Amino acid sequence: MGNYWERKWSRRGVLRGASVAGIGTAGMALVGCGGGDDDDGGDTGGLSSLRTPTPAGGATAVAKDPFAGATPGGTYRLNITGDPPTLDPHGNLSFITKTVSAYVYSRLFKYKTGPGILRANVRPTGDLAQTAEGSPDGLKWTIKLRPGVKFHNVAPVNGRELTSDDVKFSWGRLVDPKNAGRAQVQFVDKLEYPDASTVVFTLKSPNAVFLDTLADTNLLWVMPTESDGKFDPAKQMIGSGPWVFDGYQPSVAYKMKKNPEWYEKGFPFFDAVEAAIIPEYANYLAQFLAGNLDTLAPNAQDLQDVQKVKDVNISSYLNSGANWLWFDGTDPNSPYVKDERIRQAMSMACNRDELTDLSYNTKKLKAAGLSVAEQWNNLIPAGWGRFWIDPKSSEFGENGKYFKYDPAEAKKLLSAAGYGDKPFEVTYQYTANRYGKSFNDAAEATLGYLNAIGVKTTTDVQDYSSKYITQTFVGNFKGLAFGLETGFPEAGNFPIRLFTDNGNNHGKVKDAYLEKFAIDQQVELDDKKRVSMFHEAQKYHAQKMWYIPLQVGAGQTWVAYQNAVQNGGDFYTLAYGAPTETTPYLWKKRV
Image 1 (cartoon, rainbow, N blue to C red):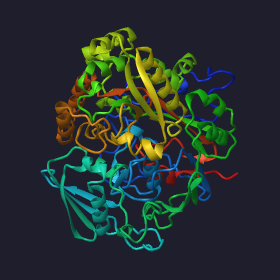
Image 2: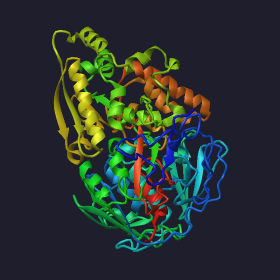
Image 3: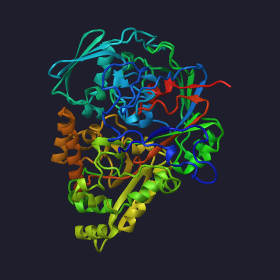
Image 4: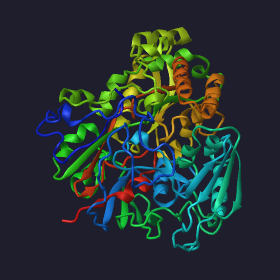
């Protein structure tokens, strides 16, 4: 069977009574076989209609109109965990900026979502692009823009029609030397703009992930040319997406209102979105329980309390996130760069099963009869299905030992590296209160594991906006860091970011084998060969441990909706695209 869990639960169908014993195996079924990211169903990359999704996994189509009885209007209320460095989607790497950008800005492609499409099986469909035609040799793609798309009717853009000039301007911002995202589009040779509605991409070589790259919420946001001097995109957002920016009060809230001119007529259903800025998990949990938020991603430990709220629906999916320990690689003479035994020791010091239980409450949920995810992340996260290889499997080979919890062997490795009689001293840094309580708990537990094998740490808990995302995340730090990787819609982005010469190479890693793999996997069009390349790279990296894979993101994410919210749990997407690919299709029942 595969490793992808995704299920919508009816209200009060979860966690009855004083324990979770009411769940039961039948309550949470395993959906799909053969791996969460297998191409065994759903759209295969064409420009098909969002509203006529094809069921994934070979399932029989069910005649269901997800919008039957929809009652437009009202406000969708949710939380976000903090303030971004700026509002400019090309100006920083913050996941908060990318998420807020998805309300306002469009991309050439987005991901097609809907009932019957598993989260791992979403595929690119047109956003600003109406058609995309590739040449027989795969080197040239001609994209026709959707006619009549207008920017929001906000000065100084004033609702004018979007043209290829705006794509040209936005592409220039993406490939600017100051933009670390340019590394992910280096396979593009040039762009041409023969007329106002046409963009022609010429690639250096055929590319397996071209459309996914254009759909990636980390990359090509299309902004109006007026962003260059006529308004400040760091403080104001004017796009062509489903929502119009309606204000931002730092540390309080973001507000969006419905774009009545969005090309998907009749959507969004909500009139407005309000995202309260609530850094502390306990506070936004309390706000949801009080009915002041419409949705919440609760920790597994809090599912009982969430279930006690009247009229709550809960769904679940297997995350595809990555969590690492990584090292400052700017000094080639530093001990953890020169000696892989130190990195191996730190990996073997970490008890991944305990970390999984800490973050996802797996023991208690299993005891209740619930089938829960317990895989270990690899260089490619466990949620990536066929691209991931299980480090616990016999197929993985000898290097799987570096994932196993073995503090005695970890101490021996440190001793062999010269730290038997003296502690290995290092600064341990992470950010708190941006990724939730489970992340904070895992960061502190990992610190304890390292201390237990003789690593002497000085802890630096960093502010997210001013230090972590602007310095540590981009490799400008000394010592050891604990953090999450940016959400990607395509597995090949992990090696591109982590092992090529780019501003987002967190550890400034220089490894000839992994750099070659990062480049080669993009141009391998045979899926089986490409998957094999990923597996071999993970086996190799297990010995090197440039990035030590840990467990935040390896388990199931739970999402709770107030029962009035309709289609919650039916529309899943990847990365930060929910404001475009999920939120417009939600609505509330009127009482």
